[in-house]
Image (cartoon, rainbow, N blue to C red; front, side, top):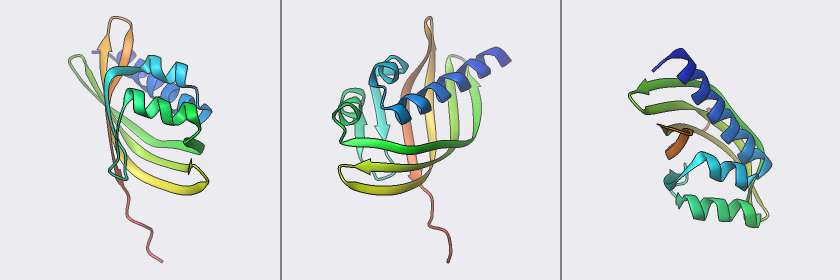
Length: 128
């Protein structure tokens, strides 16, 4: 894979972030594999369908979302993106600040990068 592949993967990851922030389930759905496994920092597991349903129903909404310092590793047709996610999330009426480290697994397909899995781990709370 090439530097161009890395740039396209980072662009797909940014498109994912913006779609999550905008609640754009159509755009987000096009970036995700039908067999997506999304493991949240809370331990909750979502499929593509269950995750998109939460966004489309308003049960989950991102008020703020940043992917900090993403790094990429390319392996054959697989791209790994790791970063820190900082977000303000609304689940129903409950607002929560999220800080997690995550790994996103992407597959290079004929039509572009497709998200296969996300694994997030909560970051420790800052020392007071």
